[in-house]
Length: 79
Image 1 (tube, rainbow, N blue to C red):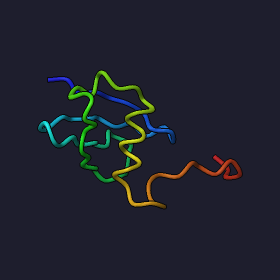
Image 2: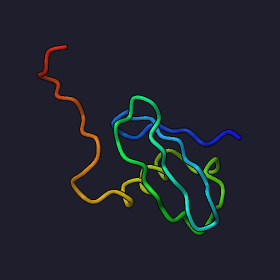
Image 3: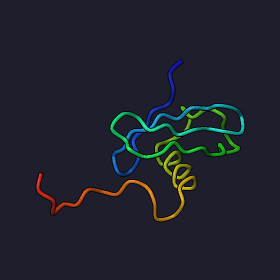
Image 4: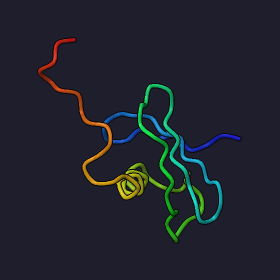
């Protein structure tokens, strides 16, 4: 089964898995060091494929405690 994939605002990849009608899980994809996040799906749809990236980002933001999550890399850091 294929799951909905999306990239958050910092470019990290996530796989959205609909485990049940009342629980979706954001699984980090390879290269994303974040922890998995469980969320309650919105009441207006039960299919992650019907949601925009912005809607998925809002769900992910609600799942994370404020002030946590991946940060944007510093533009002043040498590569």
